[in-house]
Image (cartoon, rainbow, N blue to C red; front, side):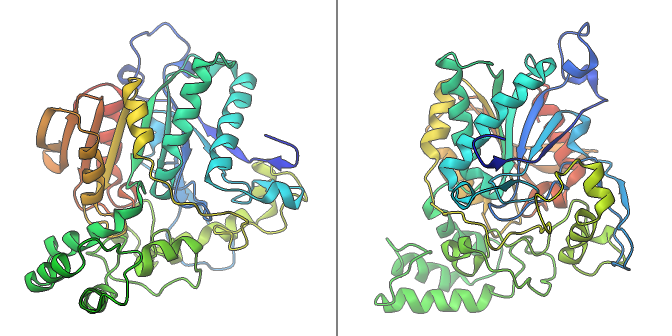
Length: 426
């Protein structure tokens, strides 16, 4: 419990391998050799702990029995102890006992996360000395920098326990309000729209926001409708993959990105789609989670409080959450000034939050480049491209990755994480 009436569900997965990569001291207990990561992923409404975890569901169509869990060979828990938290209240197994406590917004969610971490570390003193990283992707790009700043300020103000935060990690992060404008150059660069349409969009839509185009600007509006016509049937999570039948879940955040379905979790998983021979769509594979999480034996094993939640759903359409879109670039700047490390990565085939927009806000920080744009390799193949900055920020694209990259390129992303956590160049 964080405050009166608010109860958060969490679990921690402890790393057990790659000890030599992650610690300069080999005399500590195994538990303390690994970084501690706080992971908040995906959307404000949806919950999925599958992406970086050590287990996933066997990719078989649901047959009425309990879905089978299998080992995930590229789990991030191979290189870090990870605390998974159902945040904000109302997602996953987290719940509130009063209507007032059920209400939340990004600011409240970040304060809840900080309060939770302080209480959790008080109860788990063996992790206090571990290097700590705040981690997330997609919508969590709005939350992670704010949580990082709250931790930093708490440490400066002498709040106990002190959190040994070293930095943060973000994948395909939602960062600033005009991010969607980079869909135009991304679509052009990927060959989805013509040269002529792209030039016309630049000319006629200058000063307009992709999220709120003025219909009175007729030329821009018509160009935008043509853009929509050409791209509506593209799978925005990974433009090379077939577009499956959409979920009937409509999220409030959708309005911010128009048709982009920014955080509509309809076609995602951890392993590659060609590794799912019996499941036609990623969304079908993800749907297995609801059958598993609503099984009484599973709930007992997870120590879910009886009576706290009638039915678990991956996406809570009734969540009382106020979507306030922040420009969190100043938070990145503040954390950089204080010397925290950061790894920001993007799947280069993500049409939801294009890597071009991520590059743009990183450039706006105006830090000098210390490791120029170059390929990074996995198994003697180009896994993506990277550059590093003087503010201890590393940016990386993941070649062939979508929204988000670890779901499409798990091997490459694990290699990326392992190298970065061990202070090596990608």
